[in-house]
Amino acid sequence: MTTEILKPTSDTILKAAGLIQKGCVVGMPTETVYGLAGDAFNEEALLSIFKTKSRPTFDPLIIHVAFETNQQALEELVRLELVDESSLTEVAKSHVNKLTATFWPGPLTLVLPKTKKVPDLATSGLPTVAVRMPSHPVAQSLIQAAGTPVAAPSANRFGKISPTCAEHVAEELGGLIPLILDGDSSEIGLESTIVAVHASGALTLLRPGKISLEEIKKVSGAEVQKGARVVPANAPQEAPGMLASHYAPTKPLTMLPEKITELPLNFFENKNLPARLGLLTFDSKAKSKEALSKLTRKEVFCETLTETGNLEEAARNLFAKLRTLDHSEAEVLFTEPCPSSAGIGYAITDRLVRACTPRS
Ligand code: TXA
Ligand code: MG
Image (cartoon, rainbow, N blue to C red; front, top):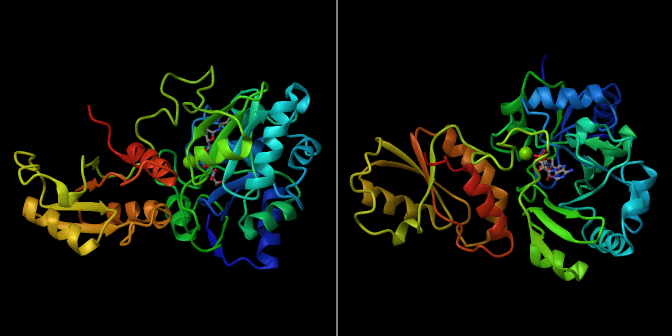
């Protein structure tokens, strides 16, 4: 199959929507990362999503919605027959209303009780469904034109680096899907924050993202537990999100204990390094490159996530720069640790740790 990459116009969006209505899957830009979109209520489309990504069916999907107003999001989710609100307490409903009124459309996914209409395949047999309303105008137009909620995991092969532009989707899934809508580079660059709203009203942060734990607490007025990503009962022991290696480049990636300019002079002694090294820094590219060359006397390929210490910029660049280093001549890769673990720094650290090669 040839994969068309098309700029979004009303015609190309209608074309993509028509493919979704036929049960095909297409590349969809969102503000977080690009998604592989298919009709959430069509089992053939869901199967095709899992197959195209080589994703195991025990890893549940996020369902994307678009509607005019975010003020009555819960009502809309019920009307769309995605969410069963009957088991939600008033506290839980109030959390959903506050969170959606503040953060939708945008990079927040909520995990809520599902209806029978949502195929078990979409939720890996879980009694809950993950839903989000993306803010990217092309995603919104596409979902509205398709006239159905759209399941969309990140448009990468399973376990690989998430795509933040149309070319990355083509690199990952070219030849496997008919069409990618090119909605420019994703503004945020990290997948959405995922929060489970339990029937009782308790909140659990399942995946960190741009919207931080602190913001969720402030808006909901509730405590938020940090939780591991859910492993469905029928999953093998090692389930995705729990897998040590996720978002992974093909070359070995190791996190340094300190920024490169602060490492002791003997840090790389007896480390048996190859001739060409890659480095991901949160600082000046020139300075960091020089520091690693000095410490190792090797050829260094360096990419910076931000020259100015701006972590939102670092998040936006993270997956693209990892990809650049993966394609470079470097044989092994190093990354500096994220200089902050607060706010979006926490989400960046989460992705970097998962991208690193597990130590055996
Ligand atoms: O930003 C995003 O969320 C992107 C864009 C495309 O919207 N999508 C995305 O999807 O990151 P994906 O498939 O890469 O991540 C889905 C994750 C699952 O791995 C799981 O951790 C969580 O969402 N998830 C989905 N349904 C769940 C459920 N019912 N309970 C708990 N976690 C769930
Ligand atoms: Mg993903």
